[in-house]
Length: 314
Ligand SMILES: Nc1ncnc2c1ncn2[C@@H]1O[C@H](COP(=O)(O)OP(=O)(O)OP(=O)(O)O)[C@@H](O)[C@H]1O
Ligand SMILES: [Mg+2]
Image 1: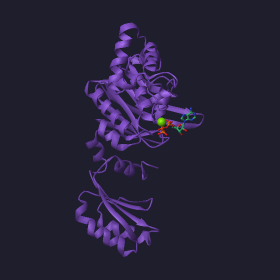
Image 2 (image 1 turned 90 degrees about the vertical axis):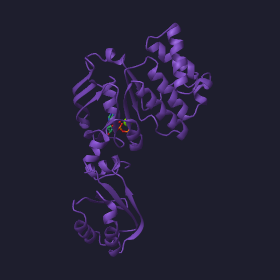
Image 3 (image 1 turned 60 degrees about the vertical axis):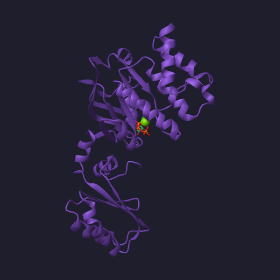
């Protein structure tokens, strides 16, 4: 059963189309990932779902609620962790959480219980009295996540919650999300880190230049590249006789899928071990100064490269 449906969503800023005809749905209880590079349109999509931006056109439903017509009603069931941290710096973690709890209509014992429970979940019970301006970026981020789950939302939306924080907080955040999801909370997780999205999410939508260019489970997305691995050859300097090399490689690889990008020559193959020697021979024969050769199992980076000809990390 879908908890959220997004249909033909568009958003333009002046004549710049930031989100173009995006359609997807999120099932109750799943973690859905929105993966895409900087400027792809992820935050703009999130901001329309949470009622911060009005779409140029399209429809958004949360359960039976029309989010565009009744944003206030929808917001009761949504928790949001925005991309930019929004906390009172000279208040303690606990005071910040109490502030947000009151915003959600909690008071008295319910508020206190909820704040204590959330402090436990985000692992900051011991530091609850510390002022936020004495916290690391990762700890602040955890308070932000806590603020979003005080009212036990059905749907938790997180916009790149692990950007620029220490590895320990990052791991803590990922485990917290895993736990919340396993306890039944539906999650939308936005990131440009494919490893996080692969780890957390059962289904993933890939966004590029405002468009949803692929959506599905990992096996479904891997199928868009024929479940092929990537052989990546890194080289120094120029790639001499690149055209000749491409021609030779086209003979070795039945499905022509050769990319030369950022001093890396990439080809796709179902059984890379079988063609590795020929591949290296062909590259060496053109005088390429080879640094390394890697074989990468089918992953989201491969899907993105295949669909766009670009790297996710641009
Ligand atoms: N308020 C705004 N006014 C004008 N343009 C905007 C506004 N918000 C976003 N944009 C533009 O819309 C496009 C999509 O931006 P968005 O913030 O949604 O990307 P993103 O995928 O969240 O990127 P990032 O990973 O960097 O956060 C960008 O080109 C951005 O410059
Ligand atoms: Mg963003």
